[in-house]
Length: 353
Length: 264
Image 1 (cartoon, helix red, strand yellow):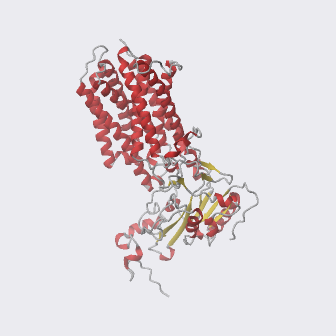
Image 2 (cartoon, chains in turn orange, blue):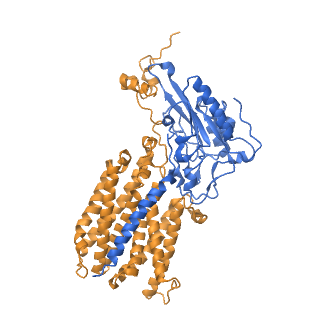
Image 3 (cartoon, chains in turn cyan, green):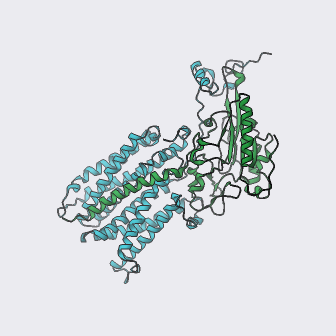
């Protein structure tokens, strides 16, 4: 008995051939596919119907904002503890602002993280165990440490501001308080990059050398920008603003260098961040408007000598605003790139770089 | 082949051996799993991809039968239609378990990876940490959910619902060592017939993930079934990532220290 197997050309038409009917596939492609053992589909069967292999994180705007506000929080806390330990007398306003901002943002961070849970009523289950192997667990304890330390610093500040008659946190030596704030800020700022890089998402884990450092640099730059804007608006010292702008420039330049190095070293796996709409967003808002523009605006501050600082409110606010937008867009694009990468079956099935 | 008997030793390492060459795509495993674990239906959406309308494993689909069509246009009699019942791999070093911050994900006495529903708070960090995209957070319960390898049935000495329902013994449940022996024997037999099959989930290709407690016999490359040829273990990336953050923090700390302390 003769069976007609000429799919697509026989009486059944293209229906039996499916999407890759003979009309759309050249004989060469069929032969190449056969040679590869792909069964003559004429297309490389490199995944199962292009379904994603790994699952993207469900994280939405809450976590992007948490990454962003967390960076501001850590930087503000660290700047206040540094200024309190080694700063000069005109830094008093920075100490006060940094402490209050740190505490408010610690509360906001906690709220955002709890809102993001599938079961917010169980948020305290995070404290059942401490697990060094889970960056999520490390982060929860780092945030708790920072919150506690900044709480003590705020008690001290309330006493200084004559709101509280006694310093309720005075039983902890000042140097220890400042060290705890610095430690909490350092670990909290560091773990977020590790959190996303220690996953099975190809773009994120392939960026593990760069992303955590970029997050830290951006935390420093945005927090300096935020605090200089705050000081500028509340009539703070021009000397302090100049110091902040110096740190901001150096952190921004480090961030730009890391981003460019990341792009140069990444091959196919960097595509979700550096190409397409996401790449355009990153280059326009983060590299261009968020780093190059404010660095140029603030450049005089880098060479400014102590005692000669002049403060132009408009310039400070403009540079700070641009840096803050750039920092947010960096988090947003890295989060988006992770999602694009997770949905790309071929990227996941490629060998890790 | 006969069903593997449950052995008397209650603490043997138990797992699945899923043989793609025996699967007929009846989806009895999917249905049995949903029934036993009281999981909701997936809806009635048609994917257009062969007979597969479930598409992939999810928080509410713990067995998923993939239908791989390989139409051979040159030698039509060599066309293949392969069915593969996918499931949580219950890895030796499980990414989800390592990522879980609450300790909800544990390894139970049968050596299987189990999410304790009364502990999980739905943080979802296990989801991107699974190199196979298995575990997912349910919109209904807010919890991370995946195959339990029928922990409740195992405790009562019963085999998992999917293995029980499988009419061709494509899904075998039993002590890992016994399953490995079965798989090796079948591999040799089929390869002797020139079938060119391979075992996915055992050996060096699994890297840091280690052997899978649910492994597969597949007649093509792993990619064809959306199985990563070399799965990654996310915790192995932590050292580099922490180092990156640490160097940046220290450098910026030194800069900030010098600038803040500037007195001339």
